[in-house]
Length: 330
Image 1 (spheres, rainbow, N blue to C red):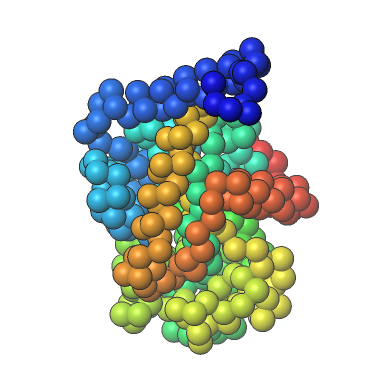
Image 2 (cartoon, rainbow, N blue to C red):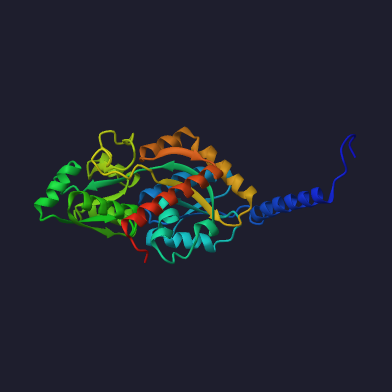
């Protein structure tokens, strides 16, 4: 015994034993298959903004973690299929879910039985960005502003269909707000992700769509479609000439959606810490930050506790908005 140190008590010995066991469990989970790839679940098909973000991070995380990081697209139902896959995955540090707000915060509010409960089945790992949803018009539409789009729809009898990446999503609620504000008979047309919606927009099968800025930005810059309004309390740096909906008289859309990573509940904390630290290093890389910013993201790394609070607050805010809209979960 060291001089001046009290002998260990039964409680301290138990605590040490528990900590040692947890650490061994965490190490064992990763060392049992040290070269096994890490799956990064994505709830949308290849070609969309979320998929592109996941592939950017996966390539860098591979170098930080020393194992392959494979993007696993489980498209459908607005990310519900991927979320269910995360719930079913072992809590061994080999499966994570890269998701924006829809799958985690919105789906449980608009679906009676989504097949998962984020507060029980998942644990937030870290947040890394926020983004804005936007209204864009197709190349065959003459409008170059929201006012011109409204005038165009009015000239066509006041009816239109606006694409959205998923049913009962924030983009769909935004379509309803546009219809109410301008007294238009416009309906949301849900797709299985932004990529097929974008294909129909570029082919002029639909005249407009609502999705995230990362979904639209490349085609907007190329002049293949036009973003005419964005959510948020300020204009997006990547789209300085595009006004916010608040500027145009549609309030209540100032809180920006988030992007983050989630793991199955029960994943050992040392495993989460290791992945969190790797993600922090990746997000700090200038080339990654520049690439994500060019895609329309506002890069803002949030560690586990702060991100968990962000998810909780965002979910509560939209719970109030959805209930006020009169929407009934199905």
